[in-house]
Length: 222
Image 1: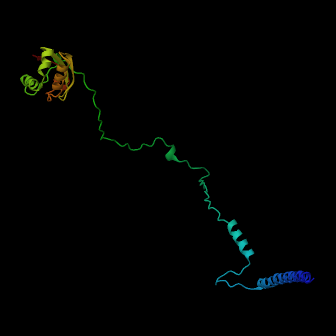
Image 2: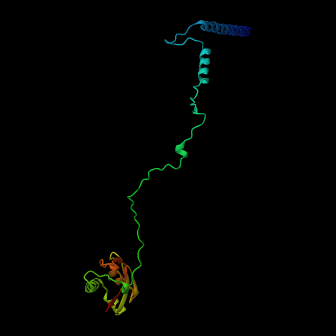
Image 3: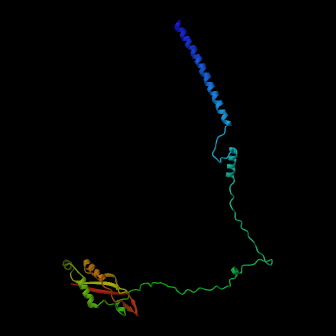
């Protein structure tokens, strides 16, 4: 019986503690509301220069500033017509075609027109024939001193003549050298090499004018 009585007392105390806790919670909540509500009538210190106007006016002012924009400047063009003697004047300077303007005469005109190259004149028709520096003997010596063949090539090719045609232009330079009739490919190649390294000739002339001249040179190989 004593244990049962203790248990009943414990249940009663639990109910009392629960009611006290509930009352204490309500008091705390009520006290919190009472503590916060007076803050609505208090003032907040702001730094100097603070605008004390209501926020609603500030919002309206900001909106007005956003809406009001400076109007773009429009430049108006005004056409003023001046009428004299009830008749409009005509621009004579535009319609008068009989007014002569001074002409500017250009005298310094340089025309750099290149004449097309003249066709080579055959050797037989040229009046003043081209000349190798020092004459024909100097040309033969030049060929003998510069043409070189290995002995076995001469043995295979044998003896004979190589005919080379080339052009001596109006400046005396040798160009367009070809073999008209050869002896051996290696011999022909060596002869062409030496002909192309010839020094400048004295150019030929036709009617006191320097012209290109064709020349055929037979070279004896032995």
